Image (tube, rainbow, N blue to C red; front, side, top):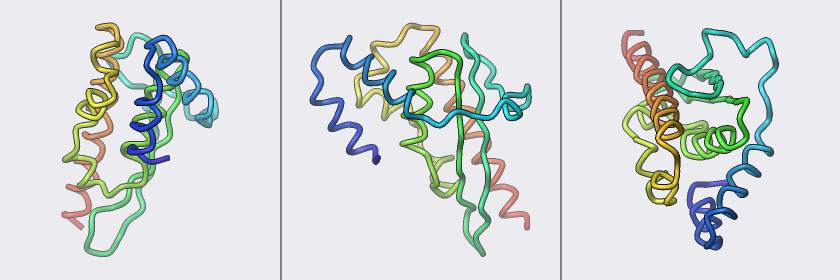
Length: 144
């Protein structure tokens, strides 16, 4: 699913309880991480619930590598937020990911205003983690 399709789906649901259900449903559709990937190094700091993100890079000659991201959480709504983040960032060049703040996309969906402060902080931590890894990948590819 693209972000445009996701945005359209959100626009079709007026009630916030139904939107939360949709976010939870997106999380249910997210493939889980194997237990072996749920290690401290993959844990996102700053989240009230447990969140793990794993990135894999595909190098490209003379270009920024492509980032593939997998994620999981022990909380249903947060797992849905991870699914939305993957819709925004998945399989894009690291330089594009580093330059793009997904929090503006969450604001477009109207989600930013309807998350608890704890969830908002956790979401910001997830975005910061993904963008930091993208920046590191860009730096690494420029050095090679």
